Length: 352
Image (cartoon, rainbow, N blue to C red; front, top):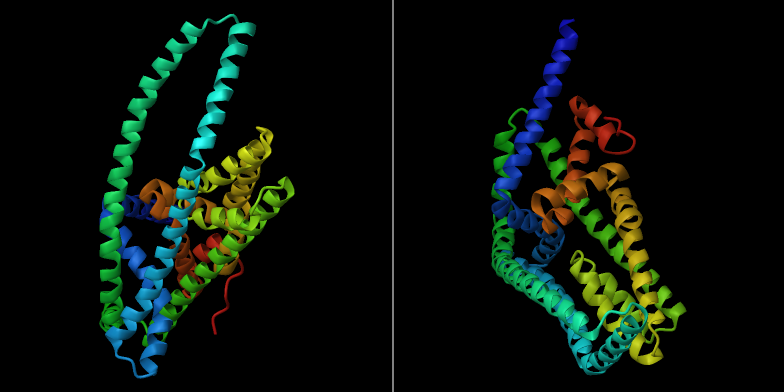
């Protein structure tokens, strides 16, 4: 009876820790999100920094060179995003004419078949426009707020990265002092494997972008859309912006397909291709490609994505997966956490 009571107390304690940790993560997300991104980037850049330092480049110079590579990559993605938007705006004149003609024909059909007068339709459109206008203002405000926060993070994250990499020896010494009973070799092994987990996460993400780009391009090629590789891989890269990215990426091929073929079915086909691939990416490709490299259970991976989205929004969708991989790796190497190791992933690792 006492064993059962102790087990219940233990489970309640774990539940309390989970709830308390979730509250802390949610309340402190403005601090933890940029720090987590900085830690992720630092782990990715650490091998580059050490390689540069081994070739007689000073530590700060090595950090700045490796960080510049990340800035160039992000700038290239943003440039691609801007090119997509500019290309869509160039086609807006033709698209506007086709939309006007389509709505005129729809209005005539409604008047003829449903016996709804043009005046009534105009009144409905006016009311809809007022509601849409208020929604648009709210959306613009949220976009400006998100853009301001993103701008602040864009400044803070590189600063955090530089400080983490420059003082990395000090942070390791802090870990040694926090866990004095643990052997330094074990802590060093966990740190090395944590960096490896982040690296595997990035490889998994690159594989996801490659697969999604190929599927998008193949679908557009079958439909006969011009430049399928350009549109397919652009949409794949822009999926790192959840929801909005795939919408922006689809605008230009939808417009070009409508203008080129003068049929509504081709834009519908483009929407269908992107929707199906996006569904496969979110529910099959991403969990399998990323969780397999991190040796995580696919179900646990999906649960982590949902939890990250609830607690940290878009940032949580990106950050919680590598964090979960590190937890799995630590649990594999601690006998007391064997149950968590089995729960989080595949076969447990035998201790040597």
